[in-house]
Amino acid sequence: MAHATLDPDGLHDPVPFGYSHTATVPAGTDLVFVAGQYGSGPDGAVVSADFAEQVKRTFHNIGVALAAHGLDLGHVVQLRTYVVDHDVSRIGPIAGAVREVWGTNPPVQTLVGVACLAAPDVLFEVEALAARP
Image 1 (cartoon, rainbow, N blue to C red):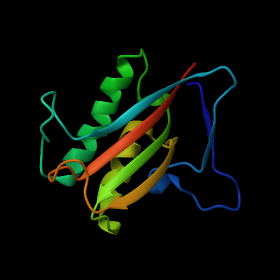
Image 2 (tube, rainbow, N blue to C red; image 1 turned 45 degrees about the vertical axis):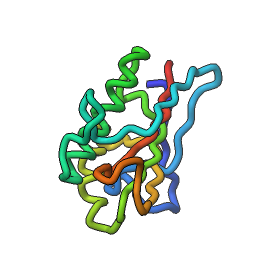
Image 3 (cartoon, one colour; image 1 turned 180 degrees about the vertical axis):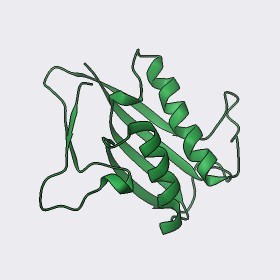
């Protein structure tokens, strides 16, 4: 892993919500930017109307994109997450998927509620920033 996360004293524990407060990347580290991914199959069609399934598939797709650069999800430093019609019920599936992938050391993440995404059946999209050691 080419980065380290830190959750400073004085701030709440963000890990149960699926993110860390801060991350650092050593000087000279290569960064890989992954464009917004969503819960699609190789043909671009959304694999399920179920929100939780879209979340899982989205993280899978980020892993596929990173593998093309010789990296995996453990190299992810930051996520930008976009959720259609966000409400508190959406946090559980997101946090659960993050826990499944990153355990107790999740990347920095910002969640943004949006009215819609690129297609009407896309409910969840994530951009990722990864660090190559």
